[in-house]
Structure formats: C-alpha cells, structure tokens
Length: 285
Ligand SMILES: [Zn+2]
Image 1 (cartoon, helix red, strand yellow):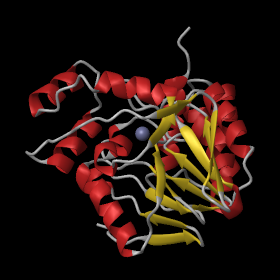
Image 2 (cartoon, helix red, strand yellow):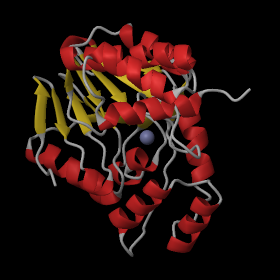
Image 3 (tube, helix red, strand yellow):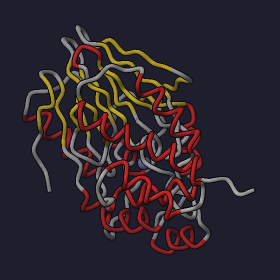
C-alpha cells in the first residue's frame, strides 16, 4: 500500500491510488495562499492518511475539497476532511439519495441483489471498513452547474462539469499554470448498469470536452498519472473503437479483426474489455 506523498509538479502533490480497497488518487494543489484538495477519499482512514502526509510535508491552509463525482470511494472521507466541500449539483443530489442507505452487510447484499449497488463496490466497502462501519455522508456546501473557478494565489483551478457514461456528475479540474488535468473517473465506463457500457455519442462528446484543455499530465483516479503522449494514445484508441463500433455494430469478430489489423497486433485484455463495453452500449432497436 502506498503511504507516501508524491510530487506531480512543482505545486501539485498526490497520494497514489490503492487497488487493495479501491482507493482513488487524492491530490493537493498548492497556491501561494491556499491549498485545494481533490477528492475526499473512500473512508475516514483514507482521509486521515492523506491529511497526515500533507501535514508531514508542511502543506496546510486548505481552501476546500472538490469532489470529482459522487461514488463512495471519492466521497466517504468528506466528513473526516472537515473542509468546505465543492461539487457539481448532481453530486449533491446523488449523495442526498445515499444518505438514506444502511451500510450493514445485509443492506449491501440486498441492494446488490436489487441492482442498486454494484458487487465490486459492495465487496470493497466491506474490505475498507471491516466490522466497524462508521460511514457518515456529508453533503457539499457549495455546488455549481457548469464551471467553478478557484484562485489559490498564483495558481488557478477550473472545475468543469463533463458528465459521461461513468457518472452524470463527473467533473474535471484543470490547473493551467501546471498544465495538469484531473479527470476523476469520467473516462471509465458506467458501473451501475447490468454490464459496463460506453455509448459512442457520450464518449465522443466527453473527448471533445477533454481536448479543450491543453495539459501535459493527465490524472485518472485509479491509475498512475499519464504523460501527454500516453494519454493521446488512449484517446486515439477510444476514438478508433467509437468509429469501428459504429461501423460493425454487434458484429464482435469483425470489430475485433479490424481493430487488431489497424493496431497491427493482438488486442490487450483492456482493449477487449473496452470493445465489450461499446457493444453493450449499443442501443437496442
Ligand atoms: Zn467512480
């Protein structure tokens, strides 16, 4: 488990993701006057760990915490953070719904059975919290519809709502001075459907939004940060699969064959999974 703070740029630090209990990356953007935190973590322990390592590195003067979207792993640490919390208005709406939930094993299993909760999240919540499930959901203090700008002193952050298949409230954070774009989970497929999905038109729209920001480093919450070259490769792959899904529709073998020909190699497991998500996302008519 990664417990040390890493430096992304001169003024941005982060605690790496931890797949053991699906902890996302938590980041701190340090302005001359104030510090912005991105995402609150998946539990009190996760939030405490992050605040602890920031403290060890003399990082303080918090402006607020911005939530990239409402999923548990990004929000359950909000209460422990105890800071001004900024999020998209839909993030607040989803969290309000979640406040009514019971987090016992029985209640979780029940929601998985009804399709209200995803099996993976349920397993990870049980693993992160163990028996002692002290989950307090805290609502954002400030919400926005399209965009929110924060001046930390010598460094400005733009929070922009982009939505997408993963979650309708997904927002990204762009730090122009450092040329870093924080994407949260917005590029991942939906997780609350029966099968994970990508819809061609949603992915295209999302990529258009992302390409408006000129960054050098791209941060996805559950991976190591991407260089521009690697990220552009990923974007090109998604665009290519959009085009090939549009062309071949549900004909999986033709789709895979043409993709493999264009890439001039066998598909990786990730690429196979992406193709599967796009086929799932085709509308039934
Ligand atoms: Zn998510």
